[in-house]
Length: 322
Image (cartoon, rainbow, N blue to C red; front, side, top):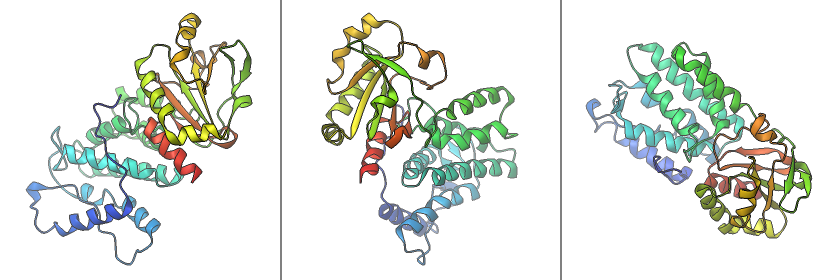
């Protein structure tokens, strides 16, 4: 699913501080013609880990947007495109270290910086290049960094900005509407389903302390890969063994003979069900952009993650229980 995206480990604050300091020490040795992406220097007076992390995020893009240079397919504001893309990937990963409202504030701020830079020099192509890159990382269903929750304030900006092309605005409005379905912190909607034995129940009747919803199709290769990743993860297995985690595989289409044929593709410890009313497919109870798709629910069925990459789901679940 993720072949076209840059994979990167989650950076620790200590490592980021060292990188930022090294970048600042190079300021005098680099010419404007060889502009690189530079992280901010964190003032020595800011000593607390949380405060340093917040300062870094608040000023992450300052040097980039204050610089000058070409804007085309090879560089943005004179910084090589690959460096900007790598910086964005790291930035998105670091959002996970903050509460959702704080993280959304950072993505809203990033949009404002992009828009302000374009306003300052309308001849530049900062706005189309940067917004396309952010959309690719935060909204593309194949991106391991995707997050409709982080994307929400960004797409709100896209819908209202005068720099958005009119022919693209309706598409962004569609994305905004879908991103507002079951966002972080809301209660996952209840729905009825039927299991492999013909018993009917409902989501809210089967919730665990934590619950993974796995929207899948029979015979789907990507579904099998993700099922294997989840079933082999020791954290998830341990939580299932103690009854704290439930995993529900949900089929949302009509070919029940094919569904039954592939029931063995998923572990016996999972609850395997189908949506006999087809409410998920036909109504916007859940917006399943692509199959497979995951949700992570917390206590009381609260949405913790909507359509995350499996690795991010595991990181978040580990964060929740520790």
